[in-house]
Length: 549
Image (cartoon, rainbow, N blue to C red):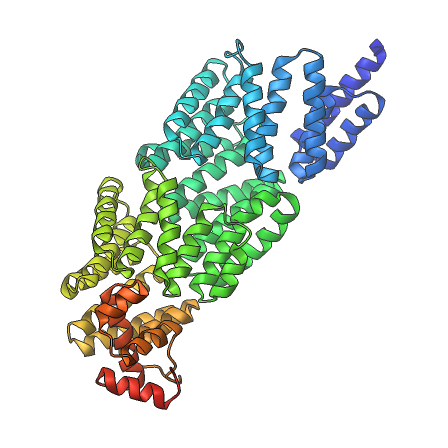
C-alpha cells in the first residue's frame, strides 16, 4: 500500500474509532467499510467487528473478527491475533452458545501469548477465561485468573483490567459462599464501570452483568434492583441495547421474587424479543425466567413448552424439577435434582443451596427420609455459613418438610412459620404464602382446625392477588373450602383413591406409587375434605357415585 493510501486508511480507522467512542454505530460501520473497500487491514476489520458487536450483527461480527485474526497472524502480530481470538472465544458463547468453539479460541489466544504475559492482552485473556471457569464451576482457578488480571491492570495502569479482574474474582467468591467480600468487590467494579472509568466500554456491560448474576445467586434482590436500574440507565445513555434488555430480563427476576408478576411478564416478553433478534444465545435468560413465572402462575404446560429449548440453562432444570413436584411426580423431579447435584460441586455453595432445597422436597415426597435428612444437613451447613434472609427461609422450610414427612407436626409448624417470617422479611410474598399454606397443613394435622382455616385463607388471598391461582387452590383445600368450585379430584388423588378402593393401606400405596406415606395420607385427607366424607370407605363410595374414579 502506498504511503498516501496508508495514511488514508489510518485516517479512516481513526474516524471509525472516534465514532465508536461516541456510540455512533452506523457512522463507525460506514467509516470502517470505506477503508476495507480500498484495502483490507486488520485494524479496520477489528473496528468493523465492534460496530457489528454493538448492533448485534452476528454474521458480520464473526466474519470481521476471523478475517482480522488471519491478517494479524499474517503480519506476525501475536498481540492483535490473540486479542481477536480472545473475543471470538467469548462471542462464540454469547452469540451462538458454542462452548467447544469458545474453548478452542481461548486456547489459541493463550498459546499466542506465551512469553507475552506482561501485556494488556494477556490480562484480558485471564478475565475471559475466568468467566468461563466460573460457569464451569471451577471457582478456584477462576479466582487465580482474576487475581492475575487485577495485578496486571494495576501495573499497566488500566482501570478497566484491574476492576474486571476484581469482578471475576468477586463472582467466584460469591459462588463459593464468601458473600460479603465477593459482593464488595463486585460493587466496586460496577461502580467504576458505570461511572465511565473503563477505557474499554464493552467491559462495562460485563461488570454490570456480573454483579447482577451474583445478586441472583444469593437472592439479594434489593441490591439486584439497584444495579439493574443503574445499568439500564447507563445502557440507554450509551446506546448499549443488548445490555439494556439483558438487565431487563434480570430485573424481571427481581419483580417475580417480589410478586410483581404483571410488570415482570411485560419486561420478559420485551427483552426476549430483542435478545432473540440480536443475541439469540442470551435470549434464554428471558425465556427461563418467563418459564418460572408461568410455573408460579400455575400454567405448567406453557412453562414446560417454553423451557423445552433451553434445557442447557441451569435455571431451566430447576424450574422443570419444580414443575414435576407441582405435578406430584417426585421421582422425575428427583432425577433432575440428582443430576444438578452431581453437576454442582460442594464448593459452589450459593448454587448448591437452591438444589438442596429441591432435593429435600423430592426425597421426602418419595419417602426417602434418610436422604432428605442428609440433604437438609448439608443445606443447614450452607445456611449457617452464608446467613442471608432468603436462605434462612429456605432452611426453615426444608426443616418443616422433613418434620412433616415423619409426622412431627408441631416441629413442622415451627419450621414453616419461621420460613414464612424470613420470606416476608426478604420481600418474597409467593414463598411466604406457600410457607403459610404449609403452616395451615401442620395446624390441621394437629387438630387446630379453626386456626388452620385462618392461615389457609390468608395465604389463599395473598396468592390470588399475585395470580398464583393453582397455589391458592391448594391453600383453600387445607380446610376443604373451595368457594364457587366443584369437588373434582386431581390426577394423583384419583390414582391414590383407586388404590384405596382396592383396600390398600397408605404404606402399600406409597410403595406402589414411590411416594412417602405422609404424601399419600395428605392426598387422602384432601379427598375426604373435597367430598365432605369422614372415612376412606365413604370417600370411595362418593367418588364412585360421582364418577370421579
